[in-house]
Image (tube, rainbow, N blue to C red):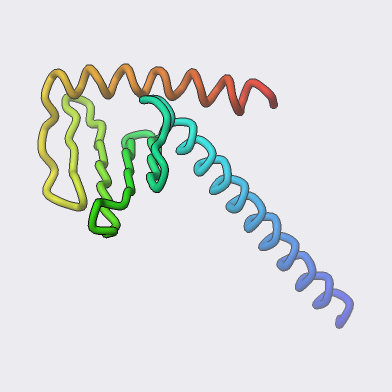
Length: 126
């Protein structure tokens, strides 16, 4: 009986460890994809961070951090919500607003380039 209990505990621990490894790998890949996406629009200045990535099927994130002339950290996060008949955006957790046609065009081109670069730099190697 004790042997079965120990085996069950070991199995549960192994399952949790595998799930944690999978989660950690997913997070690392997402961070790497975000860095690739951040470079879509040129080099990133010193003391600046830029990420652009696909969070899920319906959400794209554009995140920028920098330090202004007063030494203050400035953060802007834009979340694009892709819906069947429109695209909405929210900046810094504000209310969602429809995007302009020009911004929609720019977003489309950015997502296409992102997908290409991420595939070429990460997934084509697997």
